[in-house]
Image (cartoon, rainbow, N blue to C red):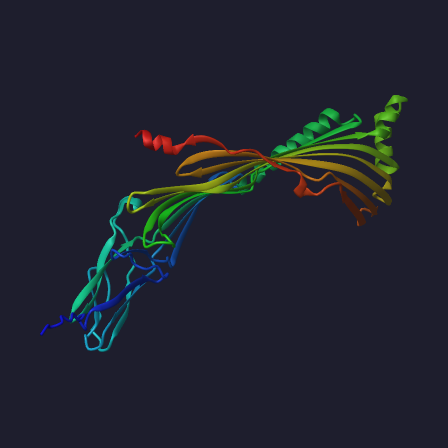
Length: 398
């Protein structure tokens, strides 16, 4: 008679042990989970360099504190007294519970590192263990500081300097060309926006790891601008050709009839985008981001006519056509390469007609209409990507 061997699994074998952070990220198969708590406090300090009217503002922001939680769930057969314990860290102890499942939410206190480089601090580590009378499983949780630092340079306060420069240029134009039929009006545009840099530990949404990130962001729209308008008075040109004094033709322009040829050139530069370097705890790096430098030029040509005086009643008509060309240069940065892609966009040719009436310098009425010759989407060109630096070859050479 043969005896059959029957192997039965331990009735208290652990079927599943799941450990997650408060954001739903789960520990790895090897039993490791890295976490960064959400910040709850914010400190902001601003320093200005320069005079009261013209200065550059630097804003430093620190986000810190905040608690996190780790949930642990143990599943096994009945009668095994499942329980969840921990060691290390700042957490509250848990007790065993009867039944087939044990669940606990473990609160993690804020991690405030000692002095030193934020990117080189050691994590605060502890173990979360699921136990039954037939065995145990353990997950190592590594907590990294939640501090987030940001330095921002604001350029908006440079507007006063540019305003003073524009006033000086207008005064120069009037002094040099005050009695001529040609008026030149130059105008500069101050930068608007900011440049910022930030650093801190963050959780990787797609894995159990965390990374230390250093990023640079630019949001300057515009970075710089320049506009020049040239107005030529046909009335003053005609009067000068027959010997009428400039003072009399100026009176005619202001109170009777004014006809101008208007030419304008407007150039504006913008810098926008961000680049980030992520360093994971296993030493791997990931570099990504785009910076776009845009130069837009607009040329306008038109004719303006006005009859009457604004002091009593006047009627003016302006007809103008304009065309704009935008050059966008995109810099792409990855861990493999630094690449440059040029682009060109021809915006629609636009015609505008405006009629304006003014009475006693108080009440005015304006009516306008515009027409575009073609659609914007049909006139875009993007060049081939040009690799400026192949980082994969640089790394392989070492």
